[in-house]
Image (tube, rainbow, N blue to C red; front, side, top):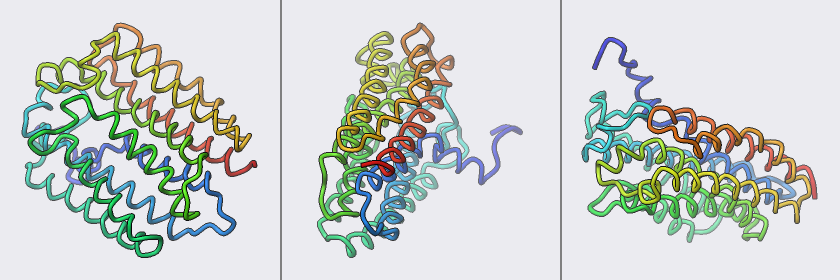
Length: 294
């Protein structure tokens, strides 16, 4: 630690990775807009948001512990990591992760009591997926399976699951909107892995970016963002206002250009922030467009 190290509160906020948190909240908002029930059940919506946000924070802390202990973060060039930087012990960060997961579990229990008890199985799967991303003896994030799990849980489950909690059923619109949200969330992970490609390769972390190489990883990232916009625009088949999402396309030009270029490591730091902005703005526009039109 140095004199410039962040304060106690600031370091824990940074460790929660606030730039990634829209990946949890935006799909819930989009799922509610897809449902657009006659009388919105605000308690259910709030509980969905708490579950999603707490799962994201818990997973971020769990990832911090696992990568820090394995030494993966020793070569990273991205934002602060608690264990890797020595600002917190693995035990403290693990406790924070479990605390966030406990919040998600309690909110999920309340939601299941209101909607249906089988939601507990979905919640248990989400908790296991969050912990197993980089934790446990065979972390799937180290084998290039991060994007499929992110697509399922931060896309389909978060979006269509919210619609189900609002309406009592899953709709085709919510699945397509969830596909869009899942692709945007995968683009966020892809931006992170593109930046950390060299360090991950040296640490034995075989992400999709590492497997594809610098050029292939850039094209993979671009395809995820483009696919996200295409799926969002497809929602216009049910709600014409969904086309307003295309107003956010210009925000994707700069990060796609950077990803397709030759920059590596620290030179790609801005791509993650810009990708988070794309996801947030596109998700909000999609939600507003779907809510306002039929």
